[in-house]
Image (cartoon, rainbow over all chains, first blue to last red; front, side, top):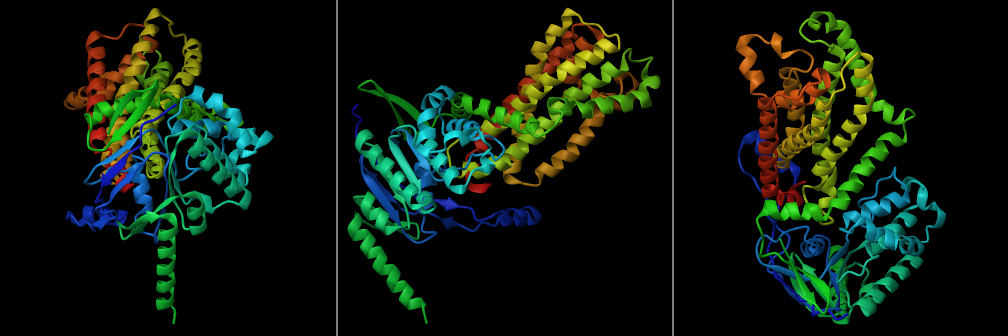
Length: 249
Length: 282
């Protein structure tokens, strides 16, 4: 199955309203008081199919926002986003899980949350449970699961279908070594077998280097650097070292 | 948001282009239909969690309306006996409709808050939680019909073919509730305290609707208020087949249809036009 090149191109400055407090103030005083925060500004980006792109940057640099815009969660305030292919986000893996329901029921709930039909889920159900290594606990309520089990299950559901684009946001930071390895394997497999394009946000530079060919350094809402994973991670690392030295007494 | 299905070597390809966008209400409608399995799952989740940990299970939800009915029958039963033939049936059917309306719309508002966290992370059609909340209400209402039937039988009520009208009335109730839920949700996106205000409005609205009392006792100067109340027609359309065993008057049905349609249209359009803001705000 051959897919055309997945081209992702956008130019996105974006406004993000600060907090609830602003609204309370506005209501009381009947005046508009916005704090304009440009979470992303002037981002121009093009990603081809089956590329694996890492995204690094300080917290608040706009990495999550970038993923959200790609995942259709946010519409850009200006500019244009084009994504070809189905998109799966691992932005928060256990987001839809309801503690009272069993693992099985939650798989269906999360699956439909991700846009799958119940028949799709039924077909993949055994694969999901196998990958997550849940076994007979699948019918127990999720609140009895360990964090690891919940994570594995959530990850299994999210990656059960071969999406054309996979967005991963620091999810892999939590989880033990074997989980991380498993995730890395599956992501790599998706890339090879399916030609899935990967966008990976992480603070783990080693992971970026091992999994991605290309990397972006986001700083203050803009793309500071765009190049090979090696170069970008090295530069970013050096920069943070520098910052560290400056702030320490 | 525009989805175009491109065929490339037999595989349907989906394309997202933020620049092109169909009309928001239509777009949302198509997305909601596409995610219909999710609606089913959400309803199943609500029903399961509601009944899972309680001993009485399904029976529990009937306790409140039944107790209300018993108490009010004791208090008002004699007074209204002349006006209303079978007060318990009159009361209970009205209470069920009102509970459906108030509970499902309130739940829809709270669901939006809960779903708000999800909207930040995963793409889901914005109306989905509201629709599911109303859907849960409908399921609860249908379940409540069983004890209602028992009460009607016990109080010597009639079971006539007019009951078939309920097949039309229940969807109308759902449409009206959905419209109101969406409309109030739209306001709650901008102003969070709308949820509390809505509770107050509901309370007043309840007394304006002839649930506890027959409409005949309303003094003339207040009658226009009651006649302008859309819930009056919806409750009546539900109640008449059950209590009177008759087909609802065409004027009453017509008003109910009108109310349901207008409510849904306005609510849907208002909500889908403002829906984008959700990801920014909640």
